[in-house]
Length: 121
Image 1 (cartoon, helix red, strand yellow):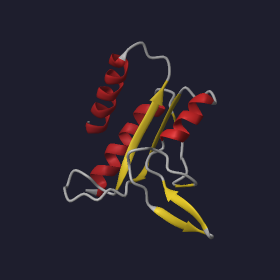
Image 2 (cartoon, one colour):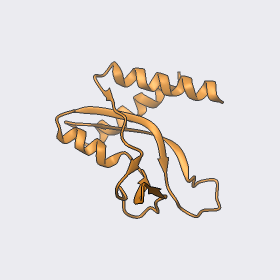
Image 3 (cartoon, one colour):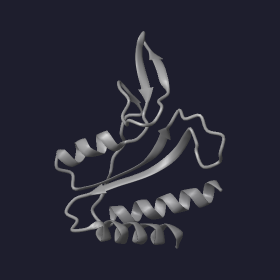
Image 4 (tube, one colour):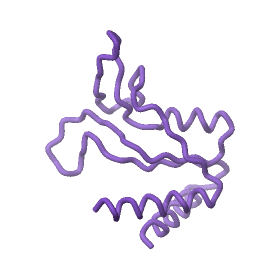
């Protein structure tokens, strides 16, 4: 399983790097909840509250606003949701990307289809 995951992620990473995306690494220990609607894991951080990141979304948007037009990140995501199904995990690996200058949702769908195809080859 680990070998398959490694091959899949590396193939998708290479696909994006060849298309001028840059890989970023966002903080996982943050000062405030990053998304509404999801429960957060609270951490005592030197007598202050901190939280495990629910998503890299905020930092991806900051990178886009700073002029980075194509970015992606693969890394852990944490959601403190009480769930008793196999469809909801409290920790999982996310693969997030953002890119500028799209004309419609079809541009996003095309990129996602090509990305997944590259990962599955």
